[in-house]
Length: 342
Image 1 (cartoon, rainbow, N blue to C red):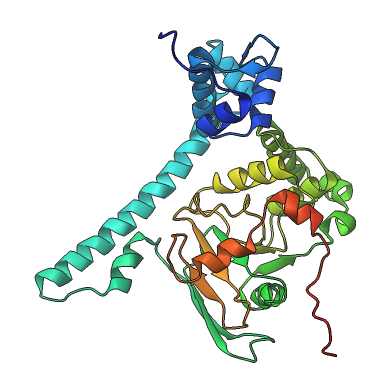
Image 2 (cartoon, rainbow, N blue to C red; image 1 turned 120 degrees about the vertical axis):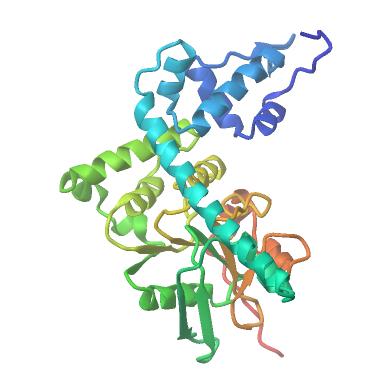
């Protein structure tokens, strides 16, 4: 291996591997990865450490816990079956989605052969999962009863908008209109008696424990806010869950772990609507085909769906609404205010 290969600091190594610096520290604490130390004792990651880190990240992408990763790295494959079975289910869901897309393309090509030119909208919809759902309803104030059509729900649907845009009212209206939907408000940490729910539901207790273990492995910080959120997400019942400000009470690393966890559910997971103003939860560069963005504009125009591409209608408005967890913490509870004219 070349002696001129660069040694990276924790921030650079984490960015290269696609994880958080806290995750790197966890790998070190678990004995999975041992960085070298430079002359003044700071951690650094050379080619060997980066190769080992890439192996850990790849095994995590297969659905393995850190304990299972340790076993695999030591040559013990025990416990792989459950993780690989879950990963297979996720991949099979993606295959079904690809088959749907292939059928759409075949139909467009057949139309072309008959001399029918597809519209731009028809071509862009080739990238969308099969819809299978559409509902039209009247919007609440401040839209004054205008009609809104929601279609093509994804496993992850983000609702974004500036203060006073009406996004919470839209979310509450969706909870009323969508079959089997429930709204999870900001008071979840205070009002959810997690211990009582766990004692009366061993299956939920087990799912929550497993989810929390995964999140902590991914760098999350355990807290009442995280437990309350995950208890609601892991509970059976609502066919659709609408979560107000999903990042409430969660630090940067925890938000990153939560959104990674939610993306792992696959393309056939229960739809979630996540109200957010966090650019960690809604990383516009990472939005995939199983995700959609609904923007509530500042001028109270009807909500619109926004494509996660620079230059798309509404993209800049969405980007402007998002902030880092540090900024969100400083502005928590701040409301918009305009002085009266003198």
